Image (tube, rainbow, N blue to C red; front, side, top):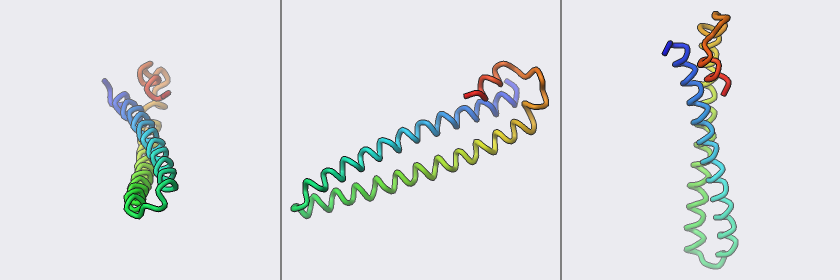
Amino acid sequence: MCWKEEWASAHNQISHAIAHIEKAQVKLNKRAQRNTASLEKHTRDRYETMKINRRLKRNGEAESTCQLTIDNLRTEQARLRFMIDRYGIKHSENGSKRLSKLMSV
């Protein structure tokens, strides 16, 4: 495999990683909504309220970490795309089919 295809493959894999992290972020958001609903049910029990508040805090931190990771990956993906465009794809009129397929995702 040539280096352009390696870069394109890395670009594609970053896209998949972003998609998986976004799924995890949605799941964390749903979990936070469930915890909020549980918090409303257990307003009288101080111990349960403390437990649920700790979970909400932890879920919030995890969700913000997911967003930070997604932003970092998109930055790296943009840098990789720039490298591919500058050093690879546009210099070849008849680029490989595999390279075009990898970059289209």
